[in-house]
Structure formats: C-alpha cells, structure tokens
Image 1 (cartoon, rainbow, N blue to C red):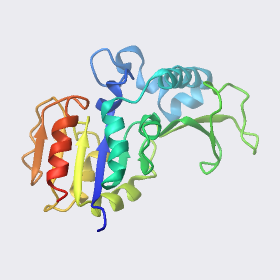
Image 2 (cartoon, helix red, strand yellow; image 1 turned 120 degrees about the vertical axis):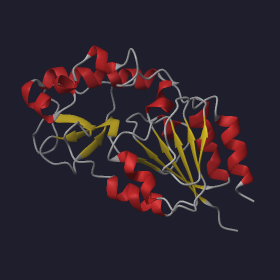
Image 3 (cartoon, one colour; image 1 turned 90 degrees about the vertical axis):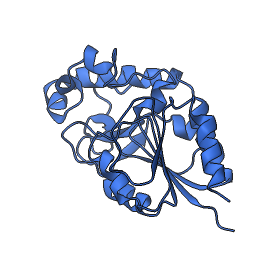
Image 4 (tube, rainbow, N blue to C red; image 1 turned 30 degrees about the vertical axis):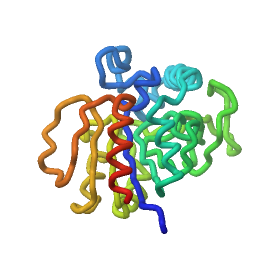
Length: 232
C-alpha cells in the first residue's frame, strides 16, 4: 500500500527550541539588528563585510545547535509516510535529523552562492564566508539566503507540493508571513490539517484545521497520535 503524502510546513518556532534565535520574538534578532542593515540587497551593496559577519555569526549558532524532538520525529516519519517538508528556516536541522525531502523557501545558511549567478551554489566547508571568497566566475560569494525584498524562487515548487498533500501540518509559524502563509490555500479543503503553535490565532477561515496549542517539542505526542489515527 502506498504511503500517504504528508506535507509539513515549518517555521521559526521549530528552530527556536534548538536555541536558534528568531527575528520576530522578544529578544530576537530584530531587536539586535536593523533588517535593512543586514538582510536586504541594499545592505549587501552598502556593507558586504557587515552582512557576511551577521550570517557568519548565525552560521556558527546553527553549527552548535542540535535537532530537537520535533526534528527527530519528522525524520522518523519517513518510515510511515511520504513526507515532504517545506520550511521557512535556513538551518540544516531537518536534514541532520534525517529528513530527505526538504524544500527551503528562504535559502540555506550552510551554503554560499555567487553574487552574479544565482545558479552557482556551493556547500560551505567552514563557518565563515569572508571578503575575497569568490565563485568560479570571480565574484564575491554571498550567503545562499533569500533577503527581504528578493523573490522567493521556490514558492511555485512549494505550491505544487502543497496541492498534493493528503495530510498537512504547520509547525511553529503564525501563517502571517507571506508569501509562505498563502501555502495553506493550495491545500485541498478536504485534507486534514493541524497547526502546532502555542499562540492563539483566528484561523476560522481554514477549513478542517485543528490547532494543537503547544510548542513544537511539546506537541510531538499529540501530533503523533493524530497522524497515526489518520493513517489507517
């Protein structure tokens, strides 16, 4: 019997429980840095060294972090489901937890890319990208990150994955960040859906959505029960 296609959409709340700072939460990166200074194309033009240093520090944080119980649970679900993860997170914790089908909407911090050709992407062997590190065409390498104001090149692929979902789970995001938040509108109204997030949201507009008001880690057991009941 074919495995059911489970699509899981993850946000910053999943990585936060592994100790990775988010932008939006209290004490998050927005309070330490101005977005326009470190995470926009204009910032890159103005001060490449500052932008590189910002992401070098984020990368070191990711390297030190470990997958949490939710990352590991999703990795293990491959045994029972055809699971596809769509994530807003730029870390590699899903992959390190064993997940094979991971689509990163906002890029991957453990990769660098050419600043003149978006198709030239390289794995980072060290923690830092430095001024003078160049691609094969001779241009400065930049973080392989989708900055504010840039297009999200994987959105169409994400929509195609969401349309095929037989089960759909959202973890650790408020569904308020676009264009990613629009993903749920591509999921069939008849597909069972769950949101795992401790905050209260008005989600009445999403048919069939069940809200598990837990953090990602604390919601593992309830999600496990719900998914296995819908996999009979």
